[in-house]
Image (cartoon, rainbow, N blue to C red; front, side, top):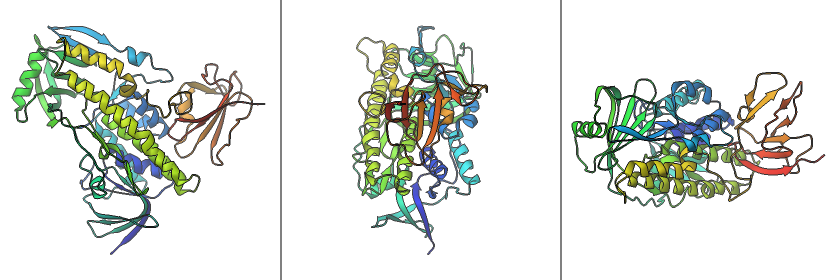
Length: 471
Protein backbone atom coordinates (compact mmCIF):
# COMPACT_ATOMS: atom_id res chain seq x y z
CA UNK A 1 0.00 0.00 0.00
CA UNK A 2 1.48 3.34 -1.09
CA UNK A 3 1.59 6.17 1.46
CA UNK A 4 1.87 9.85 0.57
CA UNK A 5 2.39 12.78 2.90
CA UNK A 6 1.03 16.28 2.41
CA UNK A 7 0.15 19.42 4.30
CA UNK A 8 -3.40 19.40 2.92
CA UNK A 9 -5.62 16.72 1.45
CA UNK A 10 -8.36 18.43 -0.55
CA UNK A 11 -11.43 16.37 -1.37
CA UNK A 12 -13.15 17.76 -4.46
CA UNK A 13 -11.66 19.20 -7.65
CA UNK A 14 -14.45 21.61 -8.43
CA UNK A 15 -13.74 25.34 -8.44
CA UNK A 16 -13.35 25.66 -4.65
CA UNK A 17 -11.15 22.58 -4.23
CA UNK A 18 -8.93 23.52 -7.16
CA UNK A 19 -8.63 27.08 -5.85
CA UNK A 20 -7.67 25.81 -2.38
CA UNK A 21 -4.93 23.71 -3.98
CA UNK A 22 -3.73 26.60 -6.14
CA UNK A 23 -3.58 29.01 -3.18
CA UNK A 24 -1.81 26.38 -1.09
CA UNK A 25 0.79 25.97 -3.83
CA UNK A 26 1.34 29.75 -3.91
CA UNK A 27 1.99 29.59 -0.16
CA UNK A 28 4.51 26.77 -0.59
CA UNK A 29 2.29 24.09 0.93
CA UNK A 30 2.07 20.50 -0.32
CA UNK A 31 -1.47 19.68 -1.37
CA UNK A 32 -3.10 16.52 -2.73
CA UNK A 33 -6.43 16.96 -4.55
CA UNK A 34 -8.74 14.03 -5.25
CA UNK A 35 -11.99 13.90 -7.17
CA UNK A 36 -14.31 11.25 -8.62
CA UNK A 37 -14.62 13.13 -11.93
CA UNK A 38 -12.49 12.42 -14.99
CA UNK A 39 -11.70 16.08 -15.65
CA UNK A 40 -12.73 19.69 -15.04
CA UNK A 41 -16.24 20.88 -15.85
CA UNK A 42 -16.99 21.35 -19.55
CA UNK A 43 -20.34 23.22 -19.52
CA UNK A 44 -22.99 24.61 -17.20
CA UNK A 45 -23.30 25.55 -13.53
CA UNK A 46 -22.17 28.98 -12.22
CA UNK A 47 -22.19 31.90 -14.62
CA UNK A 48 -20.78 35.04 -12.96
CA UNK A 49 -17.85 36.40 -10.95
CA UNK A 50 -18.71 39.39 -8.79
CA UNK A 51 -16.65 42.50 -8.08
CA UNK A 52 -15.10 41.18 -4.87
CA UNK A 53 -14.07 37.95 -6.56
CA UNK A 54 -12.36 39.95 -9.30
CA UNK A 55 -10.33 41.74 -6.62
CA UNK A 56 -9.35 38.46 -5.00
CA UNK A 57 -8.32 37.02 -8.36
CA UNK A 58 -5.96 39.97 -8.76
CA UNK A 59 -4.26 39.01 -5.49
CA UNK A 60 -3.97 35.39 -6.63
CA UNK A 61 -2.51 36.24 -10.03
CA UNK A 62 -5.52 34.83 -11.94
CA UNK A 63 -7.27 38.02 -13.05
CA UNK A 64 -5.35 38.77 -16.25
CA UNK A 65 -6.05 35.36 -17.77
CA UNK A 66 -9.73 35.14 -16.81
CA UNK A 67 -10.99 38.68 -17.36
CA UNK A 68 -10.65 38.80 -21.18
CA UNK A 69 -12.74 35.61 -21.45
CA UNK A 70 -15.87 37.11 -19.86
CA UNK A 71 -18.49 39.75 -20.53
CA UNK A 72 -18.95 42.70 -18.10
CA UNK A 73 -22.53 43.24 -16.92
CA UNK A 74 -23.78 45.71 -14.31
CA UNK A 75 -27.40 46.40 -15.25
CA UNK A 76 -30.60 44.66 -14.20
CA UNK A 77 -33.62 45.41 -16.36
CA UNK A 78 -37.32 44.68 -16.09
CA UNK A 79 -39.22 43.68 -19.24
CA UNK A 80 -43.02 43.83 -19.08
CA UNK A 81 -45.86 44.35 -21.52
CA UNK A 82 -43.56 44.34 -24.52
CA UNK A 83 -41.07 46.96 -23.32
CA UNK A 84 -38.32 47.75 -20.83
CA UNK A 85 -39.96 49.39 -17.82
CA UNK A 86 -36.79 49.94 -15.76
CA UNK A 87 -33.01 49.71 -15.91
CA UNK A 88 -30.89 49.94 -12.77
CA UNK A 89 -27.17 49.75 -11.97
CA UNK A 90 -26.77 52.29 -9.16
CA UNK A 91 -25.61 49.65 -6.66
CA UNK A 92 -22.57 48.99 -8.85
CA UNK A 93 -21.86 52.64 -9.67
CA UNK A 94 -21.85 53.58 -5.98
CA UNK A 95 -19.17 51.06 -4.97
CA UNK A 96 -16.10 52.62 -3.36
CA UNK A 97 -12.56 51.30 -3.66
CA UNK A 98 -13.44 49.13 -6.63
CA UNK A 99 -12.19 49.32 -10.20
CA UNK A 100 -14.39 46.67 -11.86
CA UNK A 101 -17.93 47.66 -10.90
CA UNK A 102 -19.76 44.77 -12.50
CA UNK A 103 -20.23 41.05 -12.78
CA UNK A 104 -17.94 39.26 -15.16
CA UNK A 105 -20.28 36.86 -16.91
CA UNK A 106 -18.17 33.75 -17.37
CA UNK A 107 -19.01 30.07 -17.15
CA UNK A 108 -17.58 28.04 -14.27
CA UNK A 109 -15.80 25.71 -16.69
CA UNK A 110 -13.32 28.45 -17.69
CA UNK A 111 -12.35 28.93 -14.03
CA UNK A 112 -11.93 25.21 -13.41
CA UNK A 113 -9.92 24.59 -16.56
CA UNK A 114 -7.49 27.43 -15.81
CA UNK A 115 -6.88 26.18 -12.27
CA UNK A 116 -6.60 22.58 -13.41
CA UNK A 117 -3.95 23.52 -15.97
CA UNK A 118 -2.00 25.67 -13.50
CA UNK A 119 -1.85 22.81 -11.01
CA UNK A 120 -0.80 20.39 -13.73
CA UNK A 121 1.93 22.78 -14.87
CA UNK A 122 3.10 23.16 -11.26
CA UNK A 123 3.45 19.39 -10.98
CA UNK A 124 0.54 18.91 -8.57
CA UNK A 125 -2.32 17.73 -10.81
CA UNK A 126 -5.63 16.65 -9.34
CA UNK A 127 -5.94 12.89 -8.84
CA UNK A 128 -9.01 12.13 -10.96
CA UNK A 129 -11.34 9.12 -10.95
CA UNK A 130 -10.45 8.71 -7.27
CA UNK A 131 -12.74 8.77 -4.24
CA UNK A 132 -12.19 8.80 -0.50
CA UNK A 133 -12.96 5.63 1.42
CA UNK A 134 -12.16 6.68 4.97
CA UNK A 135 -10.70 9.61 6.95
CA UNK A 136 -9.23 9.17 10.43
CA UNK A 137 -8.15 12.04 12.65
CA UNK A 138 -5.00 11.12 14.55
CA UNK A 139 -2.82 12.87 17.12
CA UNK A 140 -0.59 14.22 14.36
CA UNK A 141 -3.21 15.02 11.72
CA UNK A 142 -5.35 13.02 9.32
CA UNK A 143 -4.98 9.63 7.66
CA UNK A 144 -7.09 9.19 4.52
CA UNK A 145 -7.61 6.03 2.50
CA UNK A 146 -8.30 6.54 -1.22
CA UNK A 147 -10.17 4.21 -3.56
CA UNK A 148 -6.97 3.28 -5.40
CA UNK A 149 -5.45 1.98 -2.15
CA UNK A 150 -3.24 5.02 -1.50
CA UNK A 151 -2.97 6.28 2.08
CA UNK A 152 -2.50 10.03 2.50
CA UNK A 153 -1.05 11.39 5.72
CA UNK A 154 -1.89 15.09 5.96
CA UNK A 155 -1.96 17.77 8.60
CA UNK A 156 -5.43 18.88 7.52
CA UNK A 157 -8.30 17.86 5.23
CA UNK A 158 -10.49 20.27 3.28
CA UNK A 159 -13.87 18.96 2.15
CA UNK A 160 -14.75 20.91 -0.98
CA UNK A 161 -16.78 18.06 -2.38
CA UNK A 162 -20.11 19.73 -3.03
CA UNK A 163 -23.60 19.57 -1.63
CA UNK A 164 -23.50 15.77 -1.25
CA UNK A 165 -20.19 16.03 0.60
CA UNK A 166 -18.64 12.72 1.67
CA UNK A 167 -16.47 14.61 4.16
CA UNK A 168 -19.43 16.31 5.83
CA UNK A 169 -21.35 13.07 6.04
CA UNK A 170 -18.34 11.08 7.26
CA UNK A 171 -17.96 13.39 10.26
CA UNK A 172 -21.75 13.53 10.82
CA UNK A 173 -22.00 17.31 10.57
CA UNK A 174 -25.72 18.24 10.50
CA UNK A 175 -26.93 19.84 7.25
CA UNK A 176 -30.68 20.35 7.44
CA UNK A 177 -32.08 21.22 4.00
CA UNK A 178 -35.04 23.54 3.40
CA UNK A 179 -36.89 22.98 0.10
CA UNK A 180 -39.17 25.90 -0.83
CA UNK A 181 -40.74 23.83 -3.66
CA UNK A 182 -39.49 26.05 -6.47
CA UNK A 183 -38.24 24.24 -9.57
CA UNK A 184 -36.30 25.81 -12.43
CA UNK A 185 -35.04 24.95 -15.86
CA UNK A 186 -31.71 26.43 -16.97
CA UNK A 187 -30.75 26.59 -20.63
CA UNK A 188 -27.42 27.69 -22.12
CA UNK A 189 -27.22 28.04 -25.87
CA UNK A 190 -26.85 30.08 -29.02
CA UNK A 191 -30.12 31.78 -29.89
CA UNK A 192 -31.87 33.43 -32.80
CA UNK A 193 -34.20 36.25 -31.85
CA UNK A 194 -35.77 39.50 -33.01
CA UNK A 195 -35.46 40.84 -29.44
CA UNK A 196 -33.23 43.94 -29.11
CA UNK A 197 -30.36 42.11 -27.37
CA UNK A 198 -28.56 43.94 -24.58
CA UNK A 199 -25.73 42.80 -22.27
CA UNK A 200 -28.01 43.09 -19.24
CA UNK A 201 -29.69 40.76 -16.79
CA UNK A 202 -33.33 40.89 -17.83
CA UNK A 203 -36.06 39.92 -15.37
CA UNK A 204 -39.36 39.37 -17.16
CA UNK A 205 -42.75 40.23 -15.70
CA UNK A 206 -45.68 38.16 -16.99
CA UNK A 207 -48.36 36.90 -14.59
CA UNK A 208 -45.42 36.36 -12.23
CA UNK A 209 -41.69 36.68 -12.83
CA UNK A 210 -40.66 33.27 -14.02
CA UNK A 211 -38.07 34.00 -16.72
CA UNK A 212 -34.63 35.64 -16.38
CA UNK A 213 -32.29 36.19 -19.33
CA UNK A 214 -28.61 36.16 -18.37
CA UNK A 215 -25.88 37.33 -20.79
CA UNK A 216 -22.90 35.02 -21.07
CA UNK A 217 -19.44 34.99 -22.62
CA UNK A 218 -18.99 34.51 -26.35
CA UNK A 219 -22.15 33.67 -28.28
CA UNK A 220 -23.95 31.99 -25.38
CA UNK A 221 -27.07 33.21 -23.59
CA UNK A 222 -28.62 31.66 -20.49
CA UNK A 223 -32.27 31.49 -19.49
CA UNK A 224 -33.63 30.58 -16.08
CA UNK A 225 -37.26 29.46 -16.27
CA UNK A 226 -39.33 28.73 -13.18
CA UNK A 227 -41.49 25.72 -13.95
CA UNK A 228 -43.14 24.92 -10.56
CA UNK A 229 -43.47 21.23 -11.30
CA UNK A 230 -40.95 18.39 -11.02
CA UNK A 231 -41.32 17.11 -14.58
CA UNK A 232 -41.45 19.22 -17.72
CA UNK A 233 -40.13 19.30 -21.26
CA UNK A 234 -37.73 21.63 -22.98
CA UNK A 235 -40.60 22.78 -25.20
CA UNK A 236 -42.61 23.83 -22.14
CA UNK A 237 -39.67 25.89 -20.85
CA UNK A 238 -39.18 27.52 -24.26
CA UNK A 239 -42.88 28.37 -24.42
CA UNK A 240 -42.56 30.24 -21.11
CA UNK A 241 -39.58 32.19 -22.45
CA UNK A 242 -41.49 33.24 -25.55
CA UNK A 243 -44.58 34.18 -23.55
CA UNK A 244 -42.43 36.42 -21.31
CA UNK A 245 -40.66 38.14 -24.22
CA UNK A 246 -43.75 38.93 -26.29
CA UNK A 247 -44.09 40.40 -28.89
CA UNK A 248 -40.60 39.01 -29.62
CA UNK A 249 -39.57 35.38 -29.83
CA UNK A 250 -36.51 33.21 -29.27
CA UNK A 251 -35.40 29.91 -30.70
CA UNK A 252 -32.23 27.96 -29.95
CA UNK A 253 -29.82 27.28 -32.78
CA UNK A 254 -27.56 25.30 -30.43
CA UNK A 255 -28.07 24.03 -26.89
CA UNK A 256 -24.88 23.82 -24.83
CA UNK A 257 -26.46 22.81 -21.51
CA UNK A 258 -29.98 22.07 -20.33
CA UNK A 259 -30.76 21.16 -16.76
CA UNK A 260 -33.48 21.28 -14.16
CA UNK A 261 -33.04 21.90 -10.45
CA UNK A 262 -35.13 22.40 -7.33
CA UNK A 263 -34.13 25.11 -4.87
CA UNK A 264 -32.46 23.85 -1.69
CA UNK A 265 -31.14 25.91 1.21
CA UNK A 266 -28.85 24.89 4.04
CA UNK A 267 -25.86 25.92 6.14
CA UNK A 268 -23.80 23.26 7.90
CA UNK A 269 -24.06 23.31 11.68
CA UNK A 270 -20.26 23.33 11.83
CA UNK A 271 -17.60 24.20 9.26
CA UNK A 272 -14.96 21.96 10.85
CA UNK A 273 -14.41 18.74 12.77
CA UNK A 274 -11.75 17.99 15.38
CA UNK A 275 -9.85 21.18 14.41
CA UNK A 276 -8.35 19.16 11.53
CA UNK A 277 -11.10 18.86 8.93
CA UNK A 278 -12.71 21.89 7.24
CA UNK A 279 -15.62 22.34 4.84
CA UNK A 280 -15.72 24.90 2.04
CA UNK A 281 -18.10 25.89 -0.74
CA UNK A 282 -21.25 23.86 -1.35
CA UNK A 283 -20.08 21.29 1.20
CA UNK A 284 -21.10 23.74 3.93
CA UNK A 285 -23.71 26.00 2.30
CA UNK A 286 -26.21 25.64 -0.55
CA UNK A 287 -28.89 28.01 -1.78
CA UNK A 288 -30.75 29.33 -4.79
CA UNK A 289 -28.74 30.53 -7.80
CA UNK A 290 -30.49 33.90 -7.64
CA UNK A 291 -28.01 36.73 -7.20
CA UNK A 292 -25.08 34.71 -8.55
CA UNK A 293 -23.59 34.12 -5.09
CA UNK A 294 -22.75 30.42 -4.99
CA UNK A 295 -19.39 30.24 -6.73
CA UNK A 296 -18.37 33.64 -5.39
CA UNK A 297 -19.08 32.61 -1.79
CA UNK A 298 -17.05 29.42 -2.24
CA UNK A 299 -14.15 31.38 -3.69
CA UNK A 300 -14.13 33.64 -0.63
CA UNK A 301 -14.21 30.56 1.61
CA UNK A 302 -11.00 29.34 -0.03
CA UNK A 303 -9.28 32.71 0.29
CA UNK A 304 -10.25 32.92 3.97
CA UNK A 305 -9.19 29.39 4.89
CA UNK A 306 -5.93 28.59 3.10
CA UNK A 307 -3.82 31.46 4.41
CA UNK A 308 -4.83 30.57 7.96
CA UNK A 309 -3.78 26.96 7.44
CA UNK A 310 -0.51 28.24 5.99
CA UNK A 311 0.20 30.46 9.01
CA UNK A 312 -0.51 27.65 11.48
CA UNK A 313 1.49 25.06 9.53
CA UNK A 314 4.51 27.36 9.46
CA UNK A 315 4.14 28.11 13.20
CA UNK A 316 3.54 31.79 12.59
CA UNK A 317 0.14 31.60 14.31
CA UNK A 318 -1.68 29.65 17.00
CA UNK A 319 -4.07 26.87 15.90
CA UNK A 320 -6.79 29.03 17.45
CA UNK A 321 -6.63 31.12 14.26
CA UNK A 322 -8.35 28.29 12.41
CA UNK A 323 -11.48 28.72 14.51
CA UNK A 324 -11.98 32.15 12.97
CA UNK A 325 -12.72 30.48 9.64
CA UNK A 326 -16.14 29.38 10.85
CA UNK A 327 -16.81 32.49 12.94
CA UNK A 328 -16.13 34.67 9.90
CA UNK A 329 -17.56 32.60 7.06
CA UNK A 330 -20.70 31.04 8.62
CA UNK A 331 -22.46 34.41 9.11
CA UNK A 332 -21.64 35.22 5.49
CA UNK A 333 -23.20 31.95 4.33
CA UNK A 334 -26.31 32.69 6.37
CA UNK A 335 -26.61 36.17 4.86
CA UNK A 336 -26.17 34.75 1.36
CA UNK A 337 -29.02 32.30 1.94
CA UNK A 338 -31.20 35.13 3.21
CA UNK A 339 -30.46 37.21 0.11
CA UNK A 340 -30.86 34.45 -2.47
CA UNK A 341 -33.93 33.11 -0.66
CA UNK A 342 -35.66 36.48 -0.73
CA UNK A 343 -34.84 36.84 -4.42
CA UNK A 344 -36.09 33.42 -5.49
CA UNK A 345 -39.33 33.70 -3.50
CA UNK A 346 -40.06 37.10 -5.02
CA UNK A 347 -40.31 35.50 -8.46
CA UNK A 348 -43.36 33.57 -7.26
CA UNK A 349 -44.93 35.68 -4.51
CA UNK A 350 -45.71 39.41 -4.66
CA UNK A 351 -48.25 41.33 -2.63
CA UNK A 352 -48.69 43.86 -5.44
CA UNK A 353 -48.23 41.60 -8.47
CA UNK A 354 -45.01 43.40 -9.42
CA UNK A 355 -42.69 40.40 -9.10
CA UNK A 356 -39.94 41.59 -11.45
CA UNK A 357 -39.74 45.07 -9.96
CA UNK A 358 -39.72 43.53 -6.49
CA UNK A 359 -36.82 41.34 -7.59
CA UNK A 360 -34.70 44.25 -8.78
CA UNK A 361 -35.47 46.20 -5.60
CA UNK A 362 -34.23 43.24 -3.54
CA UNK A 363 -31.03 43.23 -5.63
CA UNK A 364 -30.53 46.87 -4.65
CA UNK A 365 -31.23 46.14 -0.98
CA UNK A 366 -28.94 43.08 -0.94
CA UNK A 367 -26.20 44.63 -3.08
CA UNK A 368 -23.57 44.08 -0.39
CA UNK A 369 -23.93 40.33 -0.84
CA UNK A 370 -24.47 40.33 -4.58
CA UNK A 371 -21.47 42.51 -5.43
CA UNK A 372 -19.45 40.88 -2.63
CA UNK A 373 -18.28 44.30 -1.51
CA UNK A 374 -20.46 44.48 1.60
CA UNK A 375 -18.87 41.43 3.23
CA UNK A 376 -16.79 42.29 6.28
CA UNK A 377 -15.43 40.55 9.37
CA UNK A 378 -16.32 42.78 12.30
CA UNK A 379 -19.08 45.19 13.18
CA UNK A 380 -17.50 48.56 12.40
CA UNK A 381 -14.32 50.47 11.71
CA UNK A 382 -11.55 49.69 9.25
CA UNK A 383 -10.41 46.49 10.97
CA UNK A 384 -12.33 43.63 9.37
CA UNK A 385 -13.29 45.59 6.27
CA UNK A 386 -12.01 44.93 2.77
CA UNK A 387 -9.05 46.97 1.64
CA UNK A 388 -10.06 49.57 -0.93
CA UNK A 389 -8.40 49.35 -4.31
CA UNK A 390 -7.23 52.52 -5.99
CA UNK A 391 -4.61 53.86 -8.36
CA UNK A 392 -0.99 54.23 -7.24
CA UNK A 393 2.17 55.14 -9.13
CA UNK A 394 5.75 54.06 -8.79
CA UNK A 395 7.90 57.07 -9.62
CA UNK A 396 7.16 58.18 -13.16
CA UNK A 397 5.89 54.78 -14.33
CA UNK A 398 2.38 54.17 -15.59
CA UNK A 399 -0.24 53.89 -12.84
CA UNK A 400 -1.09 50.55 -11.29
CA UNK A 401 -3.62 49.40 -8.68
CA UNK A 402 -2.99 48.89 -5.00
CA UNK A 403 -4.18 45.29 -5.21
CA UNK A 404 -1.39 44.45 -7.64
CA UNK A 405 1.06 45.09 -4.76
CA UNK A 406 -0.51 42.49 -2.45
CA UNK A 407 0.75 38.94 -2.03
CA UNK A 408 -1.52 36.08 -0.98
CA UNK A 409 1.39 34.19 0.57
CA UNK A 410 1.97 36.80 3.30
CA UNK A 411 0.69 39.85 5.12
CA UNK A 412 1.25 43.29 3.65
CA UNK A 413 1.95 46.44 5.66
CA UNK A 414 0.85 49.58 3.82
CA UNK A 415 2.25 52.82 5.24
CA UNK A 416 0.51 55.91 3.88
CA UNK A 417 2.78 58.65 5.14
CA UNK A 418 6.31 59.18 6.39
CA UNK A 419 6.08 57.60 9.86
CA UNK A 420 6.16 54.09 11.29
CA UNK A 421 3.32 51.69 12.11
CA UNK A 422 2.29 51.50 15.73
CA UNK A 423 1.72 47.73 15.74
CA UNK A 424 3.84 44.60 15.57
CA UNK A 425 4.84 43.86 11.98
CA UNK A 426 4.95 40.13 11.10
CA UNK A 427 8.51 39.03 10.36
CA UNK A 428 7.66 37.88 6.84
CA UNK A 429 5.35 40.79 5.95
CA UNK A 430 5.77 42.74 2.76
CA UNK A 431 6.13 46.45 3.60
CA UNK A 432 4.96 49.01 1.04
CA UNK A 433 5.25 52.74 1.62
CA UNK A 434 2.94 55.04 -0.32
CA UNK A 435 3.70 58.75 -0.24
CA UNK A 436 0.93 61.34 -0.42
CA UNK A 437 2.95 63.42 -2.88
CA UNK A 438 4.46 62.76 -6.27
CA UNK A 439 8.03 61.49 -6.06
CA UNK A 440 10.62 60.32 -8.61
CA UNK A 441 10.97 56.88 -7.01
CA UNK A 442 8.86 54.71 -4.74
CA UNK A 443 5.08 54.51 -4.62
CA UNK A 444 2.81 57.52 -4.31
CA UNK A 445 -0.86 58.42 -4.56
CA UNK A 446 -2.57 61.76 -4.15
CA UNK A 447 -5.99 60.10 -3.68
CA UNK A 448 -5.45 57.58 -0.92
CA UNK A 449 -8.38 57.14 1.51
CA UNK A 450 -5.86 55.98 4.13
CA UNK A 451 -3.74 59.12 4.53
CA UNK A 452 -1.47 59.13 7.61
CA UNK A 453 -2.35 55.54 8.48
CA UNK A 454 -0.47 52.28 8.60
CA UNK A 455 -2.55 49.24 7.67
CA UNK A 456 -1.80 45.57 8.23
CA UNK A 457 -3.52 43.68 5.39
CA UNK A 458 -4.31 39.98 5.64
CA UNK A 459 -3.41 37.72 2.73
CA UNK A 460 -7.09 37.69 1.71
CA UNK A 461 -6.97 41.52 1.44
CA UNK A 462 -9.06 42.26 4.52
CA UNK A 463 -7.71 44.75 7.04
CA UNK A 464 -6.30 43.22 10.22
CA UNK A 465 -5.01 46.26 12.12
CA UNK A 466 -4.85 50.04 11.62
CA UNK A 467 -2.80 52.69 13.36
CA UNK A 468 -1.88 56.30 12.87
CA UNK A 469 1.65 56.65 11.55
CA UNK A 470 4.16 58.17 13.98
CA UNK A 471 7.42 59.91 13.40
